[in-house]
Length: 533
Ligand code: ADP
Image (cartoon, rainbow, N blue to C red; front, side, top):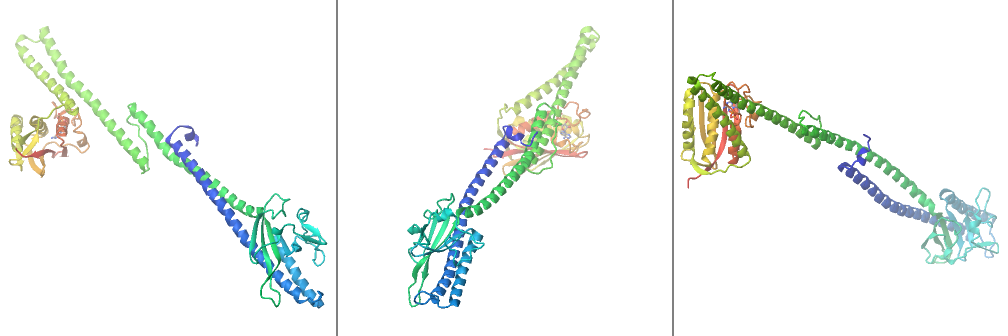
């Protein structure tokens, strides 16, 4: 059978597997979607804060440069000294280097813009920025972007107000998209952050809006990071789904194998092969189920053996007398038996017929009792009288074996609510058995006592042959006989104790047997106590 065969066959396990797989896929999709949303949010926020920091950084570098510019110019706008110019140029190049660094490291496009929209500096460089800038090895802005700018009088301008207007001096303007048409030639969106350059001139208290700094980063920079995270997630999910499926297959096999074995075993048992057993070391529910099945098969095997034994013994019990009856009748009819002996043989025939009668009656009794077809006429009955009177009926057979019958009664003037003839039958069967299995001179004791206010316990005890522990659990079964050769038990049918048990069950009472092989047996049963009203 292939590992996936359970998926093809309709079974509880198929439903179970489909359910688990659907649940895993569904939960992965939900957690994936949540992760996608929050990763995007987190990445965007992180990038946003990174770019804000970069904007502030550029702002600081610009302020240093601009301060140097103001300080080193005279009133007519000329450089005060060569050193002054060199200092300004140093700060200018520092600003440029910083913009280039952000570009190289994070693919950021940066603009430093005057308040009239003219672009003072950008990175990548605009074509006009060749004078002061040391251009070798530096990147120039793509024509896709310069085309979107206005070129006028040697200077580049932003076309749209929104590209260099910020409102309040310290506000950030965040733009997601093409930054008012600047990146319109590209498919991808840009995250652009613009901040004013607020400069406080010497002698002034309020800062003035000197222009803006704008840094833009293509959105794919963000989505790339997100894609990496999502890829890891998808890989982890695929690995975990594969592991779950492997685990599912292993677990499924663990469950299906014993179930299949159980199925086979049930089939075997239903065909009458009770020897079919399953091996299971597992202690879980399935292991317990297998053990119960094995015990059930044992019990069925026992029952089967008993039934076969019974059929054999009933056939034997009936065939033996019938054969002899037939023989005697033939003898009489053929004249082989002389007329003077006829009455002797007819007497034997009568006894044999009586025995068959007893057997058939016993069988009928058990069948009717077990089918619940016997009506009980329950009446209060004095316990001690019941025991004495029943024992008296059996006096002849007890005396014949010189057995001592002892009474140990603790139920003086107490009553039980019973169908008297049935319970007498119980006592007769038990005392007869005790007599049968107790050797000459032995003792039979009848005991009565209260176990609680509502129950009287009766014990029939003997000092007879006893019953082995292996046989003890079966003696109440129909047709069970310990001594199969019937040495001691010639007349037994194996039905006596089954009748006893059925009568007591009809009274909703229990019986149990205790015995030590070679020492004796004790049959203990209860009866419901009552008041004589
Ligand atoms: P039967 O009618 O053949 O006696 P029972 O159902 O009364 O059958 O008893 C079943 C078996 O239990 C008997 O064959 C006998 O081997 C055993 N048994 C019953 N009572 C006693 C006893 N008091 N001592 C020893 N064995 C007993």
